[in-house]
Length: 184
Ligand code: ADP
Image 1 (cartoon, rainbow, N blue to C red):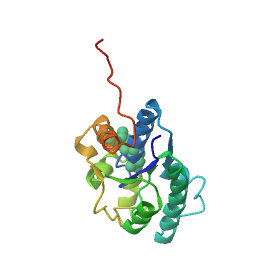
Image 2: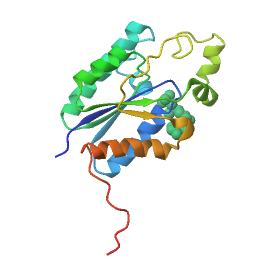
Image 3: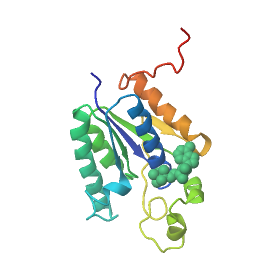
Image 4: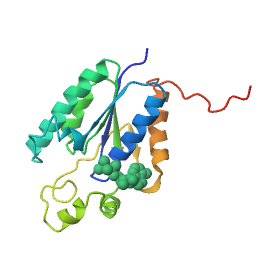
């Protein structure tokens, strides 16, 4: 029986965390892996809707998510957590608390994130209409020892997803994909 794990996707807004997480969830489910996806935007509408974007609130946000990831991952669920999670210490705590923690730095440069501006937030942040925006006027502490670093600015979504799947396979955390076509 396979073990659980915690894939922790960290990076700036618009880096590609959610897009990669959704595709990973699909691929893992197709392989019969039990997965649960925890996403910053949806968690902030429920479990942590009382919290804002001060350092204290960002820390509480990640602390609660870590608790959920701990319960799931120790019970053989593959957790895919996608959160900006700008503070190293909070991520290191998630590393200590959860099972088979894998830090995935979605290291898209801010120029690319701002050019994408998926939610129009960078324009507002640069115009000073939105305060405490990570990477603009709030810190982002990049991982120092991430297990996986993804460069979405010069790789396709499928390439990024494959890098993560290869890592999980190599560490025996998921079954190896069956060959698509059998010759005999
Ligand atoms: P985040 O969750 O990090 O805030 P999103 O996943 O919401 O970011 O947005 C990332 C945007 O970048 C999406 O519009 C996505 O289609 C686009 N994108 C372009 N190339 C890639 C890639 N290689 N990987 C992931 N997203 C990409």
